[in-house]
Image (cartoon, rainbow, N blue to C red; front, side):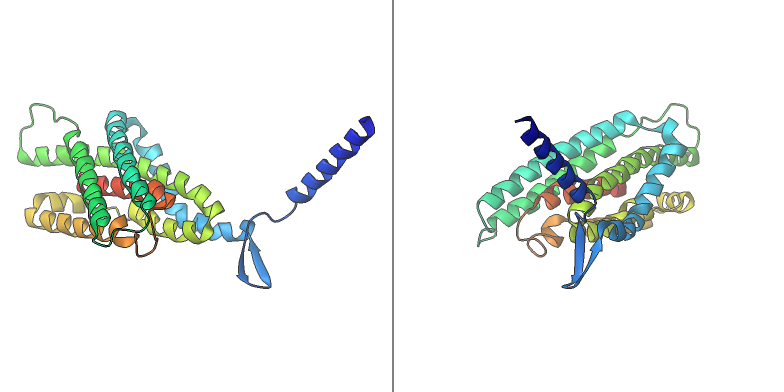
Length: 258
């Protein structure tokens, strides 16, 4: 019995050593060639690099001004809204395809619209309270913009961090989905940030501010899951749509509209 146990342990050890040195994850660009994960992971890291750099910059520069209470409230609202949308999506998936009359599709449109509206309203209502004694309108505008920048900077840090943590396992598990998703979200969350002078100019010009808000709303509607993903790219509401795309889309809506 002892000898059999020894042989069994040795065989398992040898098998583990073989598996340890084998290629566990790879892509096949052709029937006769494959690319290991040690090679195809570098483009994925470069695509996600803007989110990493933006999160690190915000953490090192604005850590002392991080708005923990504001971010906690917004993330709590985003989590509840994502949970509600996920329940609606799972219910739709259990019923099979979308109804022929479009009832389920319309319900999900309404659920997404109400959830985003609720999250944006919560984010706007929880901005910092302005201190008393502000003398001029110019100082008031600068103070509001600085407070808004602090809140949005804290929220952008969390959004970039969430984007990194959500796409890291996705890139290893499903590269064909993780790479385009990372390439899509990286510029939206980390790169498209207006400089302070331009934001100050937009805040003073009401017409430009309204136009920019309308453009942002149109873009958010165009890239929302019911319009962009389901059923055009995905036949149903998958875990990626509900667990990755939806919360990032809500955070982007808060950063742009709050």
